[in-house]
Image 1 (cartoon, rainbow, N blue to C red):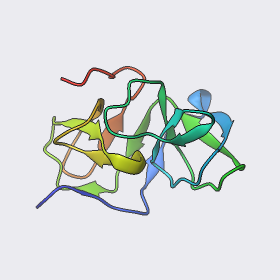
Image 2: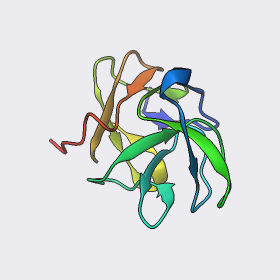
Image 3: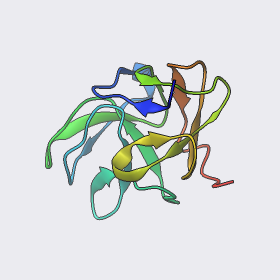
Image 4: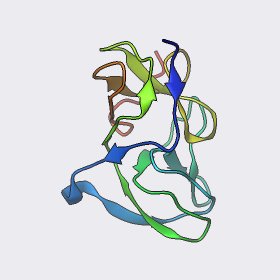
Length: 119
């Protein structure tokens, strides 16, 4: 099965680590967000702070984010593989900045604040 970042995504994170941010652009649950003149979708190879959107949101709306989350709607991952950033807040396995690891073919732990190396 080929890697696919399916939407809508299923995302969860412990309440203790959730914080609110105000968006500067629209996003979907599970998107990787970075601060660049406001909270927006992260791009591949971002080297700035990244968090995970826990809900969908529109520009100027306040949503919950977390420094880590479990995403369980991606398919075709390699268990134990590296999860990376792709364009527009999405995920990839091939290129981009490390943001987490796959637990199985369909579930990943996303830790973008801890895994910013591109190798």
